[in-house]
Image 1: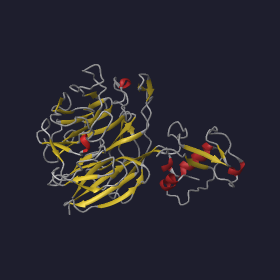
Image 2: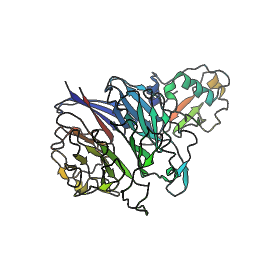
Image 3: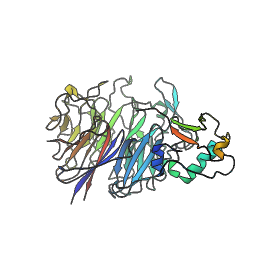
Image 4: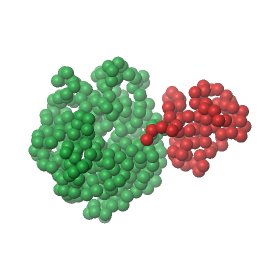
Length: 95
Length: 371
């Protein structure tokens, strides 16, 4: 799931993207696949060079905040199987 | 039919205002990129329907959008602004060294001759160039690597490269300005740079002849007279007659010599415009009167232009990229405010009216004169 601004940028209807990820399903592999499919999202979720998550972007799944998990940690089984979404969220901040 | 296209960047989106040469009836298009900060947008002088936009947000970072149909449709292009090599450090507010970190693009300057060549001025201060219409960007790192670089420090708005002036008579000569480092010039297309701040006097700098450390707010140049530069500094309106080798003050009778934008009339290289602002902390017009000041003498002697502008209870600010001119026979002058107004004068500043009054806080304006 993508936040509204990135949905518009990638010209997605409802913000939900279904992807086939090769190898272990992690934050990094999901974002690699997402950016390969939608290159205009590069740099908007994580830094171009360091690949660090932007400060006001969060990652949620299965009602947990996974933002501080290592990028190569496996994601919950429900995300792998596609029953739960991996949510990229714009933090509530700013004006 | 000739007309104008006014490109307006706001805190919450971009707007495109168009009119015929009468500049009385306007069409307003926008918001484009609603919710995003649009620090600057500018069209190519040689392909006017090609527009470049700097779009950014605290959440999702920097994007560059490009239009090839005058703003009807847009495509995101490259947004990888990566410093060349190891970025190094500059001076931080507390005097310690702080790593160079890319934050946003403040200003976009399309080439005068090639629609695919475009420059971007970044915070933290650096100049980037694209040769492929914005798809990829390379830093002209000779500027940031100048020996004074480690002593540059941010102004209140950040350490931003906000002004880029291309010399129509010499494609290798470029002027830039950085807050709060000062003005710099290259003669070799951006390979090497040197500070051009001699004659600037800045309160708060103990060394009167400091090579860098000056809070330049903006620089204006008439394309036919590239050796003559006008500068609105944090304090003082300055002029150089030798491409920045030496500056002298031309604030004259201005009610405040603080301000942000400065512009030159399209057909009269000695006619200059500023908007005096009260400072150091108020940042609104003196006495609540919004006045543009015009000098027809290249500085020193200024007249207030007030017809059509609010002369009481006005407390907006007019930022550094917030003034532009068109090049119709009767030169139009435009400025924008943090209160959301876009003011236009079709007669060189004699009379003003608001094209729109209630946009989000406006950051920048550029004007294209269309054939």
